[in-house]
Length: 102
Length: 102
Length: 102
Length: 102
Image (cartoon, rainbow over all chains, first blue to last red; front, side, top):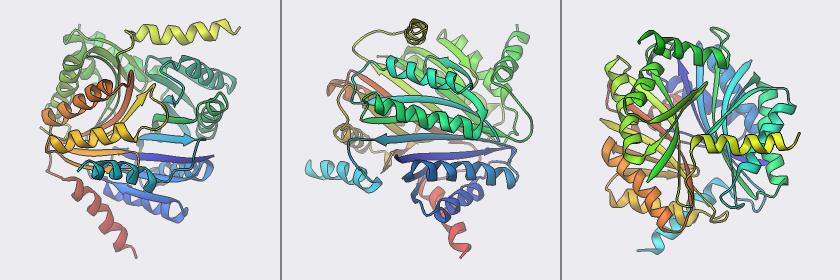
């Protein structure tokens, strides 16, 4: 089962600057060979269910190892059986409709 | 690693009534032996990381088997290394503060 | 437009214990006269759109006043035009299905 | 109070293809003059609290007018008093750290 997620990991108890922790998660997705795209409030990741969720678990493990005593993440999880749709497909489908209106 | 999640599973392409699908997920948490508590906009589940996420995967699998062609879930994921805190602890900690104000 | 939300407010930069801040939000919902129900990973609130979102804004304002330099909340927002359904209706609809299986 | 949100609007009861509805929301953010950036699983929007939340309400209203009987959205809400940080700042802060590792 293929999955697309959007993940925002928030370490607590380490102050207000969290970019170091976000960077660690990007590295985890990269090393896992997962297609991923960061945005200003989270990261899109897609791949096989088990590979994607192993990376999410790794994010929590690594951030605890980096010193975060508490982590709260928010996540969207999308699966579909009707068709295969990549992250790029989803965005371009809307962009075409927007440009078609001009 | 212990985890507490809050999960809201939304099947698409099956109309507006989704209680049948929510019921199927409750049954999955129950059969997995996981501590869980439904509320009006999701379900709290706690347990070992792997057991909890196996149940989340099973929810997506079962809902697709029930006929949902597309599923989008939203989820919060909480882990902490500083202390052990159950779902009941979290709620009573706030309730004590609220009643102490009266 | 009536709305039901599920809100989890997370103050950053104030350490790992956030129950004092969650308590402040409960008080805001109560003083606003909004129907609300706390659970272990958030709070369900229902009412008119403008009243509910004024309370959400007040949560962010009050937590900043209490000293939180940064806040990240996660929220689900549900509206429907087909029928009127309360928080209690949603839960009992699933509970009936679960007990009917026994 | 300035706010940055990440919003994913999900119409129920209108089938599995929702790009038409996502497009309508993009148009709402654009007409509101709000800085916004779509990604594969939501949209980042930033601006004044009242302007941003007026646009979110408008999304729900317009999607109901387009025929969606039920809508469930998931949203992250970020505010901070310690500094002013744009969507672009957040991404570049992580990208610099990532490239500095090479």
